[in-house]
Amino acid sequence: MDPQTDASWNPRTLVALATYNERENLPSLIEAIEAALPLADVLVVDDNSPDGTGAWCDKHADGDPRLAVLHRAGKLGLGSATLAAFSYAAQHAYDVVCTMDADWSHPPERLPVLVASLAGADVAVGSRYAAGGGIDGWPLRRRVSSWLLNFFAVRALRLPVKDCSGAFRAYRMRTLQGLEEHPLQATGYAYLEEILWRLKRRGARIVESPFTFTDRRAGASKLNVREALAAVGLLLRLGSAEWLGVGRGRL
Image 1 (cartoon, helix red, strand yellow):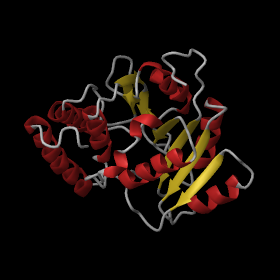
Image 2: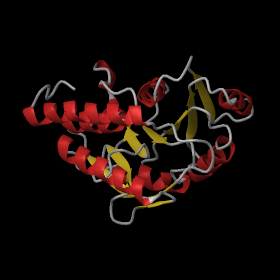
Image 3: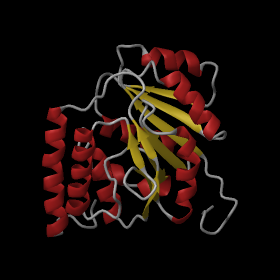
């Protein structure tokens, strides 16, 4: 059933959360997600969090049929966690998979808007930089560095969005078919840009939906200088491939 031809399209939806030490945030966040999308399920992909995130999820899932947990052996990275969620969604016949941070940076109440945006698209990107979007709780230095990264990545990869470095997204599952055939080069945060770039090169229709990003409620950010430098290096390589036409049609 296609939302473009059927106004009653009600996709079977999975909301995926990649976690590492998010025990403080998850209880209220999962409750809010389930309230925002009453028919959706939630998947937590946990990288063996030492704070007990995975154990809490197991216990909570016993009484919540809408919650599932994937346990991984260690801190394997956001990119592979996202691909694991895509694989789970495909195996369980979901129509749509949404991704979001597990630290309350992304507002659960905007999830219905993201999913509805797929009526005319294959990917809906929650955008801090589209008209109506914004950022709360960040110092000027972090705002400027984020804007510069997006400005560079959007132009290097010729992406049809203003915000390509955020995980607040909704994907139609049929758009993701075959993505796993070519492993992601990114292991850290640059997977966000790489996935959009790959989908764009395959002809995916990508739209933006504005939202206001809020700094995490609890816990510490996982981004560090090493990962940031690795992300810039990968973006340079992908940008070269984009402008030279390398691999077009194969990714």
